[in-house]
Amino acid sequence: MTKIERLGVVGGGQMGGGIAEVGARAGLDVVVCEVNEDAATAGRARLSKSLDRAVQNGKLTEADRDAALERLRFTTSLSDLADRSMVIEAIAEDEQLKTKLFADLDEVVSDPDAILASNTSSIPIAKLAGATGRPQQVLGVHFFNPVPVLKLVELVPSLLTSEETVERAAAFATEQLGKETIRAKDRSGFVVNALLVPYLLSAIRMVEGGFASAEDVDKGMVLGCAHPMGPLRLSDLVGLDTLKAIADSMFEEYGDPNYAAPPLLRRMVDAGLKGKKSGKGFYDYN
Ligand code: 3HC
Image 1 (cartoon, rainbow, N blue to C red):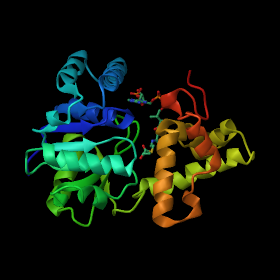
Image 2 (cartoon, rainbow, N blue to C red):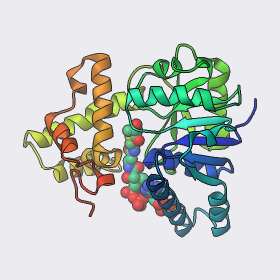
Image 3 (tube, protein in one colour):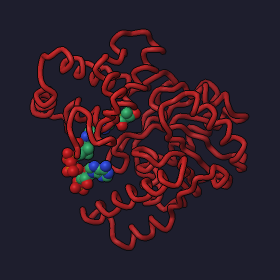
């Protein structure tokens, strides 16, 4: 099976940046495509900081950090992904934007064997595959935040994905990136978010209804259930806009009120309170 040597990532935010970092640390040549120069500069700075943190923690030598940075290139032009053997899309959870991007990637990526993957949490892979002329090479490859720390990758074939593509993506995630994989069907939320999102939304409803403070809900789950962080802090980490977008997709898919985004979450997103990335959510990060 041909190894992935040239990785492309579209979107250099929390998830895309994390995927690019893991790829570069694994020795891949990585090109990250961002919407504009400011986003590319910010993405590169975030990634550099994360690599510095790994050096400080003794996880990476300075020489390996420098080599990883050498292997990473940021661009604002999608055509710079032409020679990639795999492209992972990690842009906002917006079906229209993603569908258009997959159509564009199909035009741009010249390797006929290249895999076009999405890090979506909830948008049907079949819809993204349908925008391309190579649906057998399109699948979901879903990472978890923070990507350098969390071991899991969900692999999500659509009804049209070939077994060879799934096996190649599995080998890429496990043998090349050192992750563990699980397989899920192409249904909104896959395995992890289908379980996690209703829990996060319930915690938000608890705060919204005045049953307990965000701090106490989180303390309850950290000290009572040994979770590494409580649901409100985790919602802030995921991003409240992202959480709302995932909830909306899942509600549309299943029509189950457990997946409906509570008004408090909607209003926070309307107000620009997106969690850690915007400096404020249920907690203040400034
Ligand atoms: N990038 C790289 N490394 C990071 C990091 C980041 N953003 N954040 C933390 N780390 C590393 C630290 O350097 C540290 O490494 P060390 O063990 O070598 O010292 C280690 O992770 C632990 O970090 P800290 O000591 O600073 O803090 P914590 O022990 O509180 O851990 C955490 C932080 C790793 C974020 C932990 O709280 C955690 O795992 N939380 C749960 C995260 C989670 O559930 N994520 C899934 C979200 S759902 C998702 O992503 C799907 C999407 O579709 C919504």
